[in-house]
Image 1: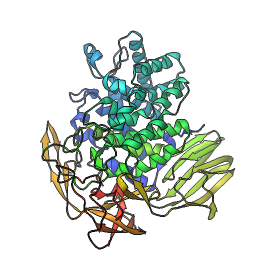
Image 2: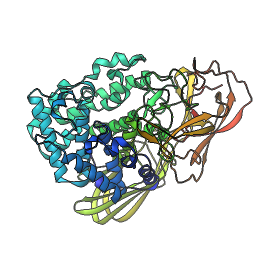
Image 3: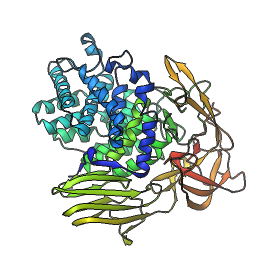
Image 4: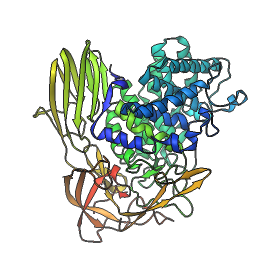
Length: 607
């Protein structure tokens, strides 16, 4: 069984390093400077929000700071966790609420801050924070034993998140009370098997049972609880996934939810929180099960849905993204989204609600943390992304470096550096989409993984290349998408960008973290014409998922078709056209990666 490598051993490079730097210079890297709910949070003695927002932010900010080895960011992270620990009560309670309000305090945020403390300890080995974590979880156990703790609302539906810090503690302190607490939480927590029928038909009704972020988190529930408690695992995550994909799946590997499950229509939204939480669930599920289907799914959402939700500079984000997104203008009347506001698809500081503002930052750092796994004499590479691992095998210093532009290119070089002769296995995953695989210039069968077991000494490089051809993928309603490798491609739409700077509820929006409406310019009603799909590669720019200068594109032929707006709306495309009869001559246009296209048509018919 492999385990993820210590995050302290990982150093991102190439485009992944650049993406993390953009995040650090953007919203996620600066919320403690600009956003009252973090800057003046009750968690650190202020008078603003004292529930999920600071823990959510730290969950991404901590790994971002340490992966970049940025001293200022590390100091800021340390100030926050130290301040939070400094307010811990004598009995171990740590959440910012008075004793008389404990029973009404939703302890979802307690699970979350415990998870953050565990993450911080992974990077720092800070004994003070480890002690604070131990004491607060022990307090949770003692309250549960006395009947003073009960799960309700968000805590009831997110009980499994506490298993992350419980597992961290149990590996250090194998004490029975930790397992007993796990049993109590699981017994009191929601069993999502009871709600499956609700997932088959979208409702214009807000319910915890169909809430998209709850469901994205929940997929790992059985795996994390069985892993800690030693129970038999029935692979419920796969059953849930298949059901969710059938009734709520999207072309980019995530599920609709604006804010609750919204069906298979390509014009409904997917909340950004659900994207990063679904990524994290896939990372955990692969780490526990070893089933590489979770990595295939992780790549698809990470390289498509995640960058699509944010502006190039990562100073603004959407609450909801749409697969076919022809406008990001406020709805003048009733919102199109099932339970979200009419500004949820704007790019801004906190469109609709601030949870995604705080939570989106975990996506890229945790992806980087998941690239390498290790067991005693073996190193496994889960994804071919630009990164380095510095570790020890048999007391020898070993470095594995990956130089690649994947997923924008389908090749890379693995370089192994061993300071002295050392025998170990290097094993790397080959994605399922690869039709041909070349290792050291020789064609190799795609068996899922490639393994080299030998005595390594000095420096040795292994060039790797995967081959694919751009192809059509069938979607509901007789529509199609184009995929090439792990990337989904979309037809970008021109737009005018309208900036809005204002203050609302005491929170200022000003450049660069103001709100933006994107008003489409030009035609959007197209269908694919013909079979030809031609890949073009370019230099790109300093932004990996650049909307202006993407490094890969696909030329295809399109024709106009009859396609109406959704009933009652002038800025939302109906989920399928009236017909696929061509209304114009074919014209060649350029598709770009979905994650680069802010306004786009992704699912279209073939005329």
